[in-house]
Length: 165
Image 1 (tube, rainbow, N blue to C red):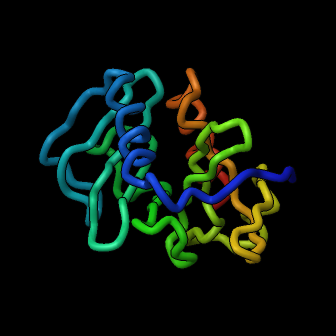
Image 2: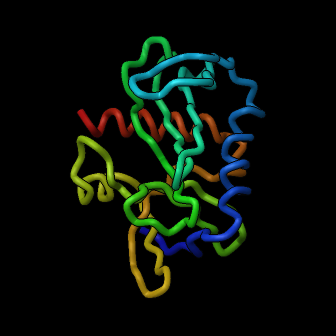
Image 3: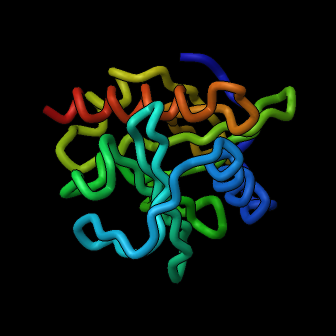
């Protein structure tokens, strides 16, 4: 476990836009009007990595759902990394975290259906952050600026699927 910079509580919209643009800039196949369980709308599918992404703006958060295979083959998302609008809501699992060098990471707090949080956090590479006196561990998912963004995210989703079995 390593120490990290600061939880992003401002510029959430920019970070979310950067996340979505990283997918769109990698030239995915766009699948409109698809449905995976309760998710319905436009999905971004990466044939070379066999992973899909579904973004959605909700009432209090940005939904970021991910799954392996095509959306048409999937019956559920493997993981959702939802980001609260204020960046701080502990009940919403996703977070953006800024390293001391200014790089932004997509992170997850370990609350995953089908897994004990402590086991999940111990299984993955985590960072410990201290936000306004509140110490917490977060799983490092991927750096938003990485040249291997989609590949790194796919590896994380594969590991989540493996872990939940």
